[in-house]
Image 1 (cartoon, one colour):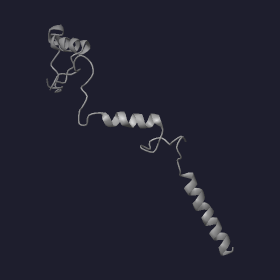
Image 2 (spheres, helix red, strand yellow; image 1 turned 30 degrees about the vertical axis):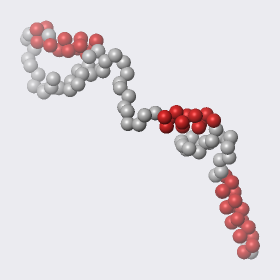
Image 3 (tube, one colour; image 1 turned 45 degrees about the vertical axis):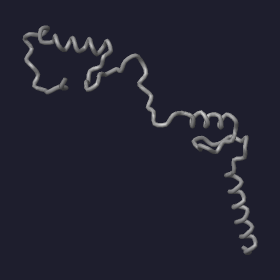
Length: 106
């Protein structure tokens, strides 16, 4: 092959690669590339995101947390009912020997 042909092919590949990587305004942007898009909606979303106060952690939603501080048992109806059953287990089964396994500490 002649050196001119090799140079021409190399230049063509380089130009094709540069053209394939460009993102002109108004064209769909690949996902997960922040800051590349230049449309109105993207700019408004970035502005809203930047207006949020930094360092604040949102509290957990709902009326009350599901588990109390330092406890492994929840505060919802099912957890409270299960705890009541566990506390009355010895009265319901008087002949059953105590387990040798440790279990979860309260």
